[in-house]
Image (tube, rainbow, N blue to C red; front, side, top):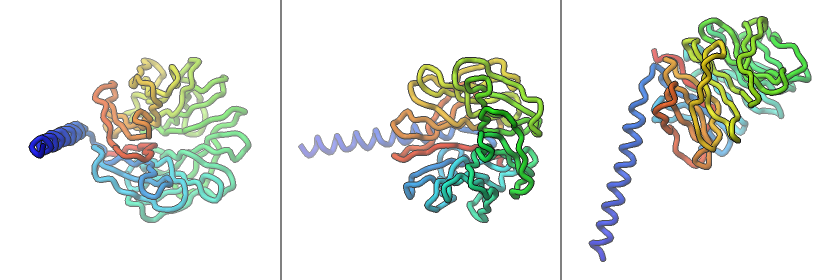
Length: 300
């Protein structure tokens, strides 16, 4: 009996070792110029905080620690700062901090909700969306919170701005044609162009750093999946195919990988996938909710 138990124990140890080795070998295949991925997690204190980890999922660190709901991290183009939103005093506000979590500064001060900051290519301005004028519109401000300006003016809702690093255009999604589609506009709000035309819900646009493609979410067959398209709206390709929601795409600095979160293992975890849809890998493994990945600029 003891020999049988010892044999079973040995087999279990061997299997665990193999599984661990497979995970590590899979992670080490992620080669990119991005150093880190910022993300949101409830893993430490039960509320949402900003964390960072290496591009292979290792060396996770918590950056914010408070009783508020911190969300939507966005790296500055030089990698020195992270903008994010935080639900405090009954509304969502925009903050910025150093990439190590120090020197937190509040940028928006009003009684309305302000969401999803995104940096201009030169790091001088931050776009976001807000409900402050009775309808959800896109705004921009200097990186210190001054000089706020409204970019979109219509009776529909405009969400989720994402700034191109190559030509300073801003992608966003809107229900202005009756359902949610992806649009782009110039940095001053002019020259709006619609990119997607279908009866699905298309959201969360994310420019590739080389400016060639836009990743986005489309609600198809009962769940959200990751898609990509060329920057002019052509060549639409579906990357994920499963019965779970895959959300919040973010490109690596070399435009080779897309990070996203998925609900496929009964909570939300961070995954990455090649831009051609291959080599999908899970980065986080825990019982908490990990969401909103944001890949850093290139390593110094």
